[in-house]
Image (cartoon, rainbow, N blue to C red):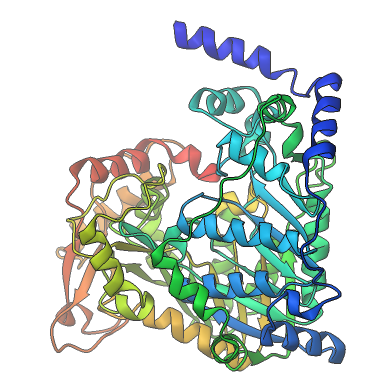
Length: 599
């Protein structure tokens, strides 16, 4: 009763979401008086204020010659180096947009470098989704007061506040379900309108190979040339959107700023772990080798993105990133190779793949995704488990589920030896609550999960972006990414995904042997009927399981003759020792099918 009363009062309190005019005036006065306007070296006029960058040089040449390059960023620590190098090299402007920001070692370093860029005259604009952004109010207030060239805004803040607790979250869902679920999942970094980065990475240690408990194998792409200015234009649309709020005018930040206390950012202390990164980003030859020499001179880059869900102006008929991705996929003829952390397809997507299978019976569908042991979201995996038979049997997918401790982990994460030593010493980044505890046996090194969102069509068309190819990405989130038309880039991306599905890195999902045809057929019928029920899926026996390759056997597609002689079954949830986690998956798959669109 007490909690219900609290929630009721919260909803009433949330109805008045704007800061009072008097407080807003006091905040603006404080900002005008305290925010620094000094520039220690004007980067736009003095070339020695910023580091010399071969990346910005290539971007400028591409923009002038109307040509384009693209470089794949598969390694987390390399992505961190590219970010920091570009921030230090910026001379005019930085646009930085992301879904999640954590103030850990890598997140703190990135923010510190952005502040320093502002102090040398670069216009820095930062936009985060509010729900999973750092909620330390004094830190946010300190950022607001730091410098005239430095601005931070938040997208869709619940009850116009920066900080969200569980009661506000429940209150937001109760009062405004659709608006609360509209999150900005887009990721973007644009430097001087000539170089940009997009993909799947959020800002936290586990996206850059610095977490000793769990790291994401993620992917981004660096693009050079005029496409960067198109990406900056999309950022501008978000910056002025009704869904975006000035951090200084949020109801829990404004009173801190207006108070008499002096709010200043504490000096950022660079961890010893990060010092090699800071040395590398000053090495022009290394940066050239990593991000210019490896860049592909591509035929065409198409930037696709969702617009912000402005209140009262959302037009369901307008083009979205999903439309662009489906248009590209619909043209496939012989091969679609996909990687996404979650194999949860919408009805629209399933229809698209059924049509492709009908039009091109021999087309290859490869889907690389997480196993339960590797995933950060067991609830999403529950719907992979629920619909796996349909994906394999009806759509003809070759499904591969990533192992939590892949054989090629050192290739995916070059810092793995250091991470093992750091874990032994007790170095920790702290847990992200949504991930939860490790459901597998602890090992010397960190667990790994997929977070990359990419596909390759017919060995020529590639997509790298933020869209998980799931219902939430279609209906609630804003997403963005690039579609690249180039054979060389496609070969590199497809090679990366196919390496992830090698036997030592992934298990193969396949149908169980039929055994007695009559009993197998009856089980399949009941399973299909149960899966199609709108709410409850209570049939306990699944027709699929995971397999691993036998020693010295030859890898085969799951439907090939001889498959069962070359592979052995390992169960639906290999390496998951947590009975609670296995039970949670079965219960969600059985009784919570209606929540699929918001996962």
